[in-house]
Amino acid sequence: MRRFAQVDVFTDTALRGNALAVVLDGDGLSDAQMAAFANWTQLSETTFVLPPTDAQADYRVRIFTPTVELPFAGHPTLGTCHSWLAAGGRPRAAGHVIQQCGIGLVRIRRETDDRGARLAFAAPPRRRSGPLDEATVERIARFLQVPRSAIVAHQHCDNGPGWKAVMLASADEVLALEPRLASEPDLEIGVVGPVAGKVGVVGAHGGDTGPMFEVRAFFPAPGGTLAEDPVTGSLNAALAQWLIGEGLAPPNYVAAQGTALGRAGRVYVRRDSGDVWIGGHSVTCIEGTLAL
Image (cartoon, rainbow, N blue to C red; front, side):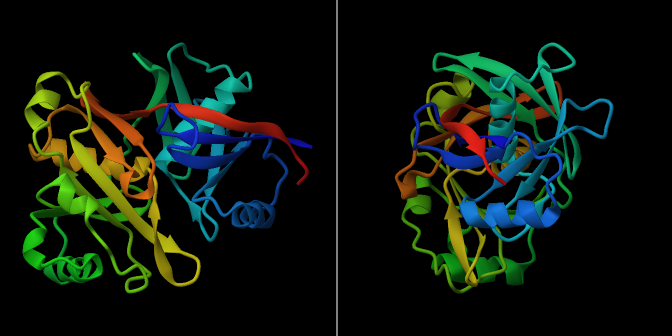
């Protein structure tokens, strides 16, 4: 029997964030067993905690969607670390946890706010950045069913998952989207829009007074279609590097995601000493053992 947890990430209220399955004793499982279990859960990601092979790391994690293995993903990083700590994991260095995954080592730190303790990871470097080509932008506009002129900025945001990000003029426009989910099965698309009336307040108060951006994410799903992800750490990490780097967002802000799905995800972004940190709360919903 193996220890197992299911957690809700980027929320302090159960069932309002993005669910993650965590197998805390993944050692000895084959690739096929991991892939089969991730397919069975049908969650956006399932993770398997393993002993590290890098002496600097506290643990190693493998991250699976129902169809593929990912080198990195954000909500699995925070949710796995939350579960590892709750199960008695002790980091080698005080204040930081070092996670080993497909892209290498990822630093995770503990933070607190008026909603309690949360974790944050240092955003990994983007594998690809820069503007999208015009043909891709037009393709995304058709997928989103908006005119090309509605996309006011765009960028490659590839940090493992190959996100292609576009910005609309407002959060209301982002929430009003009705994308053609079956039209572009191979794209990974992120959409971001500023929340009207809150930019000055969030910027002036370090992003602690409410969401500054509304984010939506669409990714390939089984059946040759796209699905919407409730809350996406990897996308928000790359978005933050893009938006802060180009002066489209202040160094500290809060992003909302999942609103269109009835969720209330909150992603806390903070640039600190050159790093961009992506933070969020996690709630354990299920604990037990797994026969696998």
